[in-house]
Length: 228
Ligand code: DX5
Ligand code: ZN
Image (cartoon, rainbow, N blue to C red; front, side, top):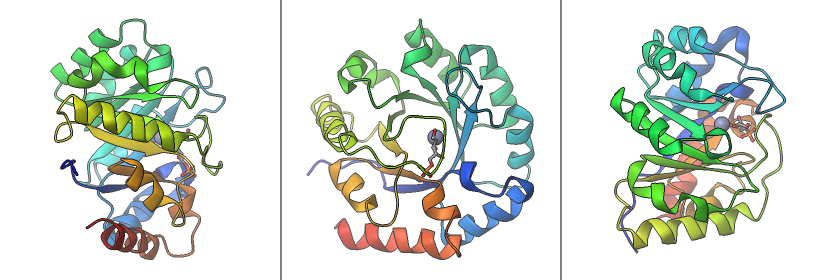
């Protein structure tokens, strides 16, 4: 099997208690979280509103864990500089909102951040073919973006497999992460990784459990047992 980038666990703060984010972050860090996934929503691209650069800046001050910022907003390019200044390490934008995706990805990288493209469940992975060599990560949405706690859409698995094949054929396994976002829990995380993902986002699957640190450790245990 081709060597991929390391397998990582990214808790999504969307399902954390917003009144005590620093404490929530400490819990998942204690469990060994690799990244913190932050969902930014504008009430236009998705039917929900969450947080923006000021909150990211406050979180940056309380953690050294890389901040993986998922922009579910229209006109994301208007905010790249603000998120850079706020301390984002990875900035992901949606294929569906970008008229000039190649340019936007270049700008994110020029600003020193890792750049990602996310696609909705209904968007085929084939649209990404010419951008694979330009990005650091692809985000396969396995729910329709906008809310935590939704069910994993099963056909996302075949999209992950196809994308892994495309990335392998392009010789990019060691450069491009496949992140899968939505509906991942203890009982399906291994399936997602075996399909070809190397970063898994878990929101409700971690923060709605009684002991988020222990849940992160359980996910890690499953990964270590399932992946030689
Ligand atoms: C959905 C967000 C996800 C969300 C995942 O729009 O992009 O990151 O937090 O939450 P769960 O893991 O509960 O599906
Ligand atoms: Zn997300």
